[in-house]
Image (cartoon, rainbow over all chains, first blue to last red; front, side, top):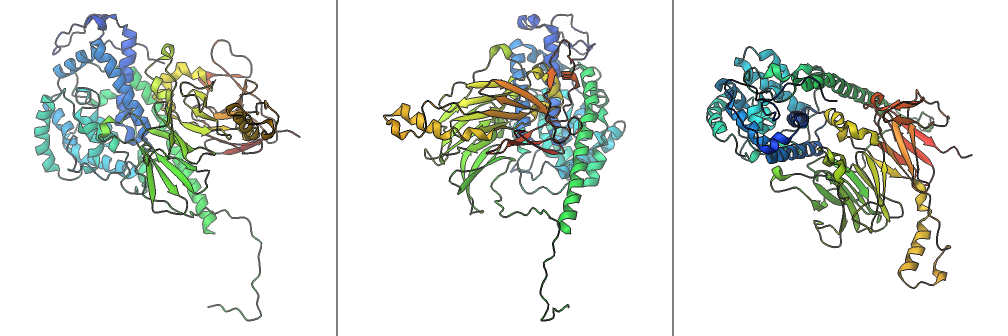
Length: 303
Length: 335
């Protein structure tokens, strides 16, 4: 079940800290030292998996509030336990020490923008919202040549997986939670964004570890049905149902994080990608079945 | 424009049966989250609808108005840690309903207590087993379905790994627990990874427990007060009514538990593996160790083939089982 050959992490209490150039030496607490490395690795990979799931929740065929709440509770549980062990602090300190380069942070922050004042963006969690999200990615990432190709297909995943952003502070309080809501608005007002993001990135640095109370609300706010969702464009769904599963591979995305500590065994993520095609193809085959059913119903009703 | 001549009479032409589903009434705009349950009341005038955070009460004849009877939405959505997963009216007491949550609790509410049923009359929750604790404990405790027994004395809940029978008079723990697929407990991390752990299985009672209704009513009253024997319509003590519960699993398997005889069986709904009119062969999943012939190992189960929806005819031994793309109807081979 768990991949073999996982990389050692800086926070592994039982072994010498891996020397990273910009890494401040950390001394694990007594409690952390008693944890077995296997358990803490498992826990860390579970945390990573859960955070990815939360951020990708709008890529599901059907949005599911119950699932998101359960995953969020799991993350909270892990975070509480890690706080008690002292490993949470170690991790956030290391993240703070290993900053992303400034331009990468800016690129990320462009998407971490304020919602409209009411916080009630009418964005149904559906294929249409997804479509906007994809377009948003292309618009925003124009200047970023090297990763442009991957970004435009990777869509909501890529900028959000800057681990410094999403693990800052207590769970769910990192600025990246907003991005789920923001995608639909990224198409507008790019110039305003760059102003906002300049101030936000500073905020982001200062408030790295402080909770951002809007974020959880916006994650769970995605599920509210504001008005009937427009029917998803079948051609568009067809196009994106073949998304390259390599978007699970963090290595492609986190090009700015060379010196950062690894956030979890990448073998696990690769095994995620091997699960990816099954999940994706089964959902797209379900959709094609539904289309067939619709077609049949049309024939029956129409005659 | 065609004109019928005065002597022509419209003729009835037999045609093939056409099935067309058309909505009769639309009850709109009362839910902002996904609806998970509807339940018609025993008064046959009202019904409830439940979404993740709210439950509304409707009159069947009135489509533009509903009453909110449960609301668990927090003021700050960031504080949301629990959602409503299922709700149902009591089969006989029209003021009573239950709703289940993602934290494994069931609340029984009485609508006479207050307009907004925030405080439950009863809270059913089984204490956690500390030896089985893991990061997945909460997820697998989430209740996916709740169903009253036909006689209204019990309710059944389905969580990820088990089916539990609760006596409405005992909130502290279920009276019976049946393991649906305990062999999955060691696979929870993989099932979390592929999202199967969030699958919502339904459960259902067999129809026959209604037979026992009159027996039990009479006997119950006899215990409570000084009824004379003449008021008891049948002999006392009554035999326990036959009671079977059913729920789905993976690999197109579904499970039945005979409560009276303490037996259970695993059956498969699949065209490849059984012909029509053939008695279903019981299946067995090999949890570990040596796999016997005809057993299926856990690792070869197909988790894409899930049976989430099952139903039992209210009177007869006929069941309906839904796989991903097919609906199977099975009946008891009695005579």
